[in-house]
Every structure is written in structure tokens, then in C-alpha cells.
Length: 239
Image 1 (cartoon, rainbow, N blue to C red):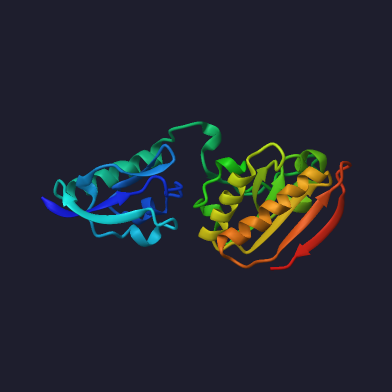
Image 2 (tube, rainbow, N blue to C red):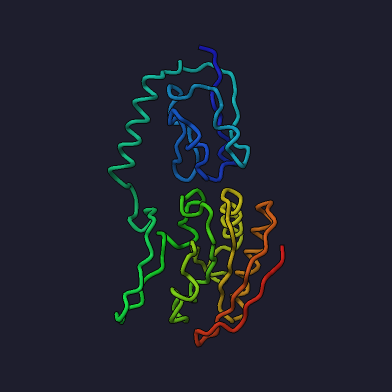
């Protein structure tokens, strides 16, 4: 039959997953990092997903397609919910989790962890993860926690963290990823924590470029850590 159906431009799609949440029928899923229409049967053609795509990758076209089956779509959504609740497919290290930071134990020798989420590597973070909502975001160089002995209580506490290396990793990718996190969430503050070595200043540039690309206007704090693990500089970069 001739009817409206969703079309996804994979070249424009960045795999953010917002369209998946917007589709009540479960017709769209992220497959190999791209949004895909898994079945015409599940697509009602109303286009609820259109306004949620930040890249303009979704359109509606009228063409020959199988009829929309509301019952089949409902059963499909129930299967997806069941699978999501009972299993995780993929590397366990990539499984998204929110954690409760540990409370200090008076008299104990151990320093409690203040990590409130998993994963922490910027490449593995989902921009739509719930721990980004109203978050104080920390962009940290991956050497910082090794150099700074009291990193958890002094800096990490109360923050959602994204970890990366501006020298060894893909800077343009990081700019795009941080920009996406800022664009899709109501981030309350941004803090960059880097080592004193010159190459690590690239993390500050990543933050500055990501803010510009996100279309938002916000200040951010930069904290420099010495090789001895001391805070040697704090400065606020204006919006």
C-alpha cells in the first residue's frame, strides 16, 4: 500500500539514539552505531522521531510499504523491554551503570570511591546516559587520577566524569562527542582537569571547541595538576 514511512540518512546519523526513545513503536534501533528502521511493520509513519534528531537525518517519504501493524509493534516493544531488563549484549565494560558514591568510613584506612557512573572513557559514554542530566561534568586527562593521590575526594566528588588523552586519542572525535553531550543535556558546569605537561593543554582546546560546536554559551574551569599530584593552577574561562 502507498503510505508514509520513515527514511534515515546514515551519513548524517551520528547514532545519538534520541530517535529510538522518541519512537513509541520501537521501529528504530541503533545498529552498528547508526539508526535503522528495523521493520516497516512497526513504523506508523507519523514522524514523532523527526523533531528529536539533532542532525536532521530523518525524513518522511510516501512510498509503497507494508501496512502498519499496531499489535505487532506493541509485542515488539514488550520484547525490547524484556530484553533490556534481563540481559546486556556486548562487552561488560561498556554496560552503562549509575553508582552511589561511597560514604567515608571514619577510622578506615581506605579512601572511598566517589565514582558515580560507568563507563568513564569518553569513547564509551552515551550522550543520552541518565547521569548527564543536570550534571556537573568533569573532562579529565587519563593521567590525572594516577598522579593525584586524593583525586576522588578533592575533585571527582559530585561530578560526572569523561576521561581521555588529548595527545594519543582522536581530538576531532572528542570535540564532537563532548559537543553532543553538552547539546543534548542540561549540563550545569564543566571542569577540565589536565596535567601540567604542554600536550595536555589540548584537553582545554577540546572543551572550548566543543562548547562552540554545541551552540551553547557557558564558562568552564580549568585545573592543572603537577607531576607530583598537586593543584598548581585554577582558572575560569569566560563564556
